[in-house]
Amino acid sequence: MNVTVASRSATEKELSIQLPGADLDKAFEARLNEARKGIQLPGFRPGKTPKDLIKKRYGAAIRNEAIDKVVEEAVRAACIQEKIVPVAPGNVETFDAPEGGEVSFKIVVEVDPELELTGYADLKIPVEIKAVEASDIDATLEEMRGRAAEVKDSEEPSKVGDMVGASYRRIVIDGVERAITAPAFQVEIGRGIPEVDAGLTGVKPGQEVSIEFTFPEDYADESSRGKQGLYEVTVEKVLTRMLPEISEDLAKKFGFEDLAAFRARIEKDLKANADRAGREAAWDKAVDSILEKNVVEVPKARVRGYVEWQHNRMQSQGTQLPPVEQMMAIWAPEAEKLLKRQRVIGWIADKEDIRATTDEVGARIQEIAEMYSLPVEEIREELKRSGRVSEVREELRGTKTLNWLIGER
Image (cartoon, rainbow, N blue to C red; front, side, top):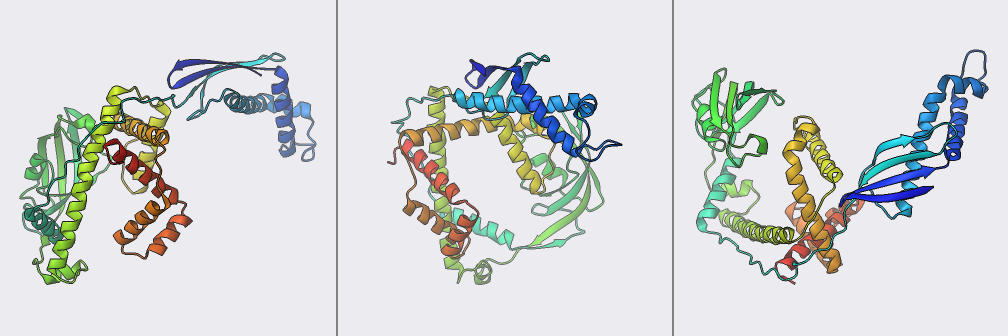
């Protein structure tokens, strides 16, 4: 086998491969013998059909199967020989295999480019943590009160705080009518797009409503941001919430001895969230700073793989989504950014030999157990059974690397 390698870009390798024609002849003969065992033609016992007859009838298909096998094995051997690690199956661009002649083909494979980062060792990014005020605790308590509310169907006109269930009759964005992929939806009035909330206020079940609005600039679907929208919907139901009093009974409903213990836990959680938010903001600044100073490229196959994984994950949870090809336009930029971030963190962790210790993994498992109010041994055994202890270790390694970047070493 003769292999020539050329770099098309940082993420693409072009392999030109030549093989003796005997390799294909051998693979064809082996596949022909396999096919003969399973083919039975009239007048012949199973496995006794003459090879010449099988070749005449099925030779072209068998040769294509032999070609696939030869190409697959040759590409695998070539990648091992040239120390190339493809991130996805390659794309065969040219192929030539004349009868009796040598096999030659060109295939392009995507790879993770080599990386060498600079300017990451002394970023000096401060962690700014927002103080938790009594008003923050009160607001969270009010939110918890809402979670404990009893929800009932209502025939009264909807109001702020009610939930409205409706079905789309028509969706128009910037004058273009869109297919309705998820016909039903439910919103809480006062928590969505203001014009949509206003359009669903004062409605009753069975009422048809037409709502014109502008998608906000931070809307989840980037392709819709800032565009004009029109929803024509039919109200299916209005749900109103009966809020409980903020009392000792409410605290006990959430598993606390009294209201003071409930507030103390809320304060603890808010402080933890504030600390996490402050750190995440600093981490983002650190990684963004590194990406500004260095070129980090991601193979297209990895971006697509991430989008496909996200698409499958959300569909398995019951979310109705357009096909992957449509979601690529929406999710690909964010997927590429995330993959660049992961590459940077992984490279620095390797370079600086940052690891999670056994004690740190144990402490993290303890935190998970407390989070779910389960015995730590039960959580540990479940993680071992599912093979996810390594995920905990990698998560900690990433967090330690990010903290190292902002100066906590």
